[in-house]
Length: 124
Image (cartoon, rainbow, N blue to C red; front, side, top):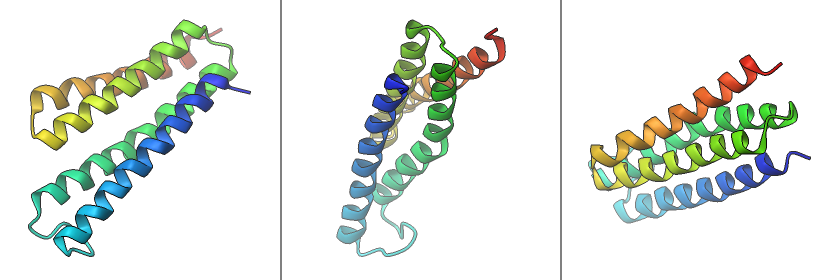
């Protein structure tokens, strides 16, 4: 069943589609088929998408395993909330070039991973 993980995974899939379309549209605009050329906006979009792909799958696995092992609903939503907030802040920070926004986004993402890992390690 895993209703919380299912909901978060569906949201992540939609977010990845949005990030990917953003990259594709900027590629067309910049006329760049591979890499990012000298287009800073394209580079930012590629990195936002890549960073999402680097972190979200493992966070979803941890969330799903924690839910499967009957972790508390509050704990599951804490993992999900940290992940979602972290990814949103990271995206805003990377797109605007503001480290003051991007850094808390990464901390939220790291928090989701650590909380998920800790949950699995310390559940009895």
